[in-house]
Length: 440
Image (cartoon, rainbow, N blue to C red):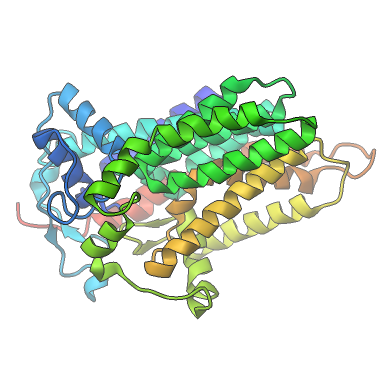
């Protein structure tokens, strides 16, 4: 019964974020809104650099879903004409709002920005589904319903995840499909009698994830790792599982890849992104000091919470607490104990994280974008390893009596994260965004 409670609290919390954060104050939201509006008006995909500027190079699945939801609701196109705030901190000021916000934008669901706010609620639903997928992944990976619910709650109440799930952004669908793919892989790996159905579902979700955002490419090597581990455990050929996974993973996105090759010149649209966003180019090598100094710090902080356009930091003590939590989990994971019967699953989770980090590093060779939200396709593996590590840290050694802390820490952790999430919104985010007022 814990999962319905976690999902209900997350939905209420993320909906509150979606209504409180002003329009276009989440990453790249104007470009995403233009893409949705273009689909609603023209019924076809935009041409990068010519139409729907900002995000036209992106895969279309999320935008098709959002445009269809808007059409079904009878909504009109999203008005995208934000006026820059000269007092924004990127422009030398001290305010958190990148844009001015006239009084006509309020109240959120009936003001000038009502369509945007309504579509943000679609992202809230996708975020809740991601939390549910992480819970299912946890049941298979941890074998404990309480720990699985705790892992889902940790994911749900990470401020950056709540913030992202309250925005118009294709990450929300990509995160859901990646979480679903990994959940199927973990379930297939945890069962000695798993048939081809789970592998087929994992492949279909991986293929659909590529149609949502190309960060979903990381699921392909994750699937191959899971197949290898399954074959090693069973000691027999896994060609059927390989075919079941790779067939939909390759065939589902194939039409889009072919279209991109013909229209943009490459299957992934990478060249189109470089051509249409030259102001973001910042080429470097893997030996650049950036990957030792700035990259890990920014990636860590923005995984837990950097709001707005990567400009709005939380208090330093919050990051200190997140660092302490991370170090405690690592200590628990490295603690010696009894042989782990779920070692293969932990290898898959760790491998998924390593692959996603490598993908982010490769992206940052061309763009300086160490954004923690790019880790959310593997949010499930991250929180599952955190919960596993914390459990290992408080596990009694040998045959000693159980320590009283294991019965308390899940509730304390969930309560702390949920309260911190709401307090950040109420006492930090809402007042900061109330500063930039535009003409009525």
